[in-house]
Image (cartoon, rainbow, N blue to C red; front, side, top):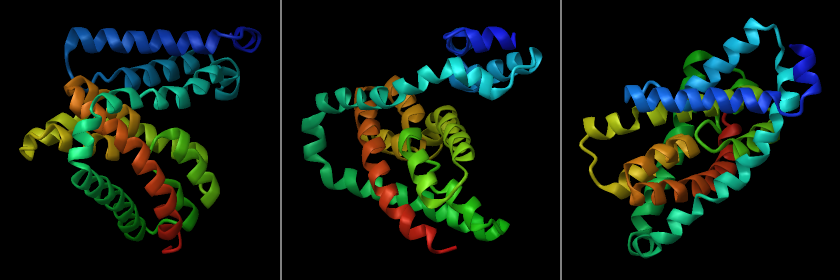
Length: 230
C-alpha cells in the first residue's frame, strides 16, 4: 500500500474524495448534523491509513493536489456576496460591527484560555487564527512562530463544530435575522461554517462569505497585537 501511495499521483486524492462522498451520503440519509461530511471523511481517511500502515507524508504526496484548490474555492464564495450587494450596502455598518466583534471575541477567548491553562507563547499564537480560513490561518501561525500543523487541525475542528452546532445555537438564542446568522457562521467557522450558511439561505451564505475575507484581514492585523500579550 505504501508503494501504491508513493507511485500513484492520485491515490491520496481518491481516498479523500471517496471518504467525503461517503460522508455526504451519510448526512443525506441520516439527516443529522453530527454526520458532517468533512468530519466523516477525516475519520475514514485516518482509519484507512492506520489500517494499511501508511504514514501521513506518504499519503500527502498524492493528496496535496486538493490543497491547491483551497484558495480558488474560497475566492468563489464572492459570487453569492455579489448577488446580495444591495443588501450589504444597506446594512454595511451593522455588518462591519458584527465581524469586528466576532474577531475580537475569538482572539480574546483564546487569550483568556491561554492564561487559564498556562499555555506557552508558541502554543498561544498557534490557536489565535483558529476561526479564519486555512489559507490565511497557516500564514498567520507561521509568521507568529506557532505550530502550523496544529493550527490547521484547530481551524478544521473549529469549522466542523460551527457547521454542526451553528444552526442549533441560533435557535437557542432566538437569532432569526439572516444577516446575523451569516455573519456569525462566517466569522466564527470560516469556509466550513459558510457551507452551512449556504444551506440555510442565500443571504446567510452571502454574509458568511463576506465574513471570511474581512475576518481574515482583521485577524492578520489583530493577531500581531494579541501575540504580544503573552
